[in-house]
Image 1 (cartoon, rainbow, N blue to C red):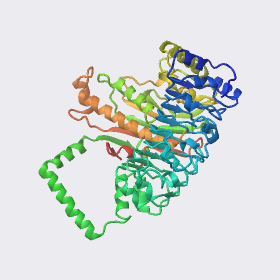
Image 2 (tube, rainbow, N blue to C red):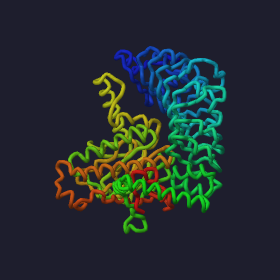
Image 3 (cartoon, rainbow, N blue to C red):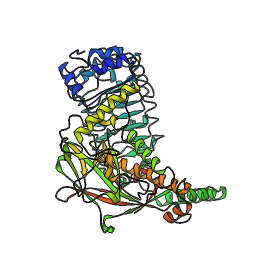
Image 4 (cartoon, rainbow, N blue to C red):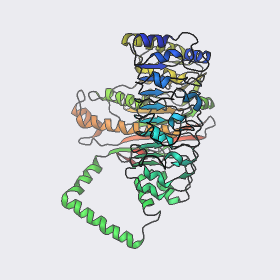
Length: 573
């Protein structure tokens, strides 16, 4: 362990007996570099620590010995976007971490797993105790892994979520499932994400994962899908888009995100039903419908279908004044991906509808956006947005914004102000965690330019992932929204987040109209949506994102968008 220079954060954590610690910022990176790329020895004197995060520090090359032994209560360890290799992790994770439930090693350039996670040198199956007996979530995204060994199943037998997107894996499950290990490896694994790899083979042994519910192998090199996928008893969500499948009928199903249809097609051997089989199926279908009708289930199905949320898509060709967002080349190296749309017909007047709308956005940031690390949402009052818009980058000392609830300020001064507020918040609450915008400051560490969305008057209306502007703030009277999702991870993540955001807004909108809460009178609601018609569709207007030459980069929603929420949302195109 390195001991160069004082570490006031660690001294405060020891003095206040903190259980959570987050280290970030340029000062931390300088101290790590001065200490030879290692964590400081003072970290070993925090045995009560339960959550540790040190991310975005390019100087961090190794943990140093004894971390596992010194932090037995650790249940969350986030070490993303550093420069840790297998050897650098090996000494620190050399011992068991019996309480660890979440381990994030994404973005470290790992070419192999450390021995503790079943990498080279982890030994045979044996009877050795698991190094991570309680580990539930393991994030290895955005590394350089080419293969995974069977040792992982022994090291983390209770794993529920394995994230492998953005590596160089060529086969799945590949060597992940041991042949000489436990009879049912990964009995609880429900989510497996291996999008954006080089996977050319999806093995039949994928069916050996009994709890698998969600499988993502988008943007790989698959030419066919194994029939064994149909034998995965709990598989509900599967993403195979971005693969050049030989079977064009199957590829059409894949692009339509029809997981159930895909599995049925594979179960039937990848063939269409013959005439005799189709006739038999028709007989069975009519028999089921008659049984439903006799039992009243058919009527229930009609009620359920009628109760589904409605959204109507207004295509660019049908819109006399479509909104366009122009993207400057500079965003590629900062925050490359953006998806936008317009949502019309929202009602935020009744009761606490606006408050619940903001709460939903906060929850999405925590969950699907993974605390804004993979994506950030911004919502605006469309009537206050001055088009056309430009998605651009600006230096921290030039970017000016009027943040929500604050006066206009330069970005660098805003971040400094938020850092001071965060430190004050820590002192008052005597714990490491902070709330609000303060949690996201480290996401901009090391950036020479900051991303921003600029309106036609040159005003910055959004500064992701930190805040958007008071200028376009949503109020109770807001009826039409401009929605924006940005990410430095992938375009597909932006689209998935936008799909979910629209679904949640549609749910809130119907709830507000049906309940006619508080301050909104019955007359007001009926005037907005018609008497007794709380299922009037929201209108989603397509928004084009183009480059500086006007070439189309993204159109949302396209034909394949909103498919991930189709079980709850009826889309009228």
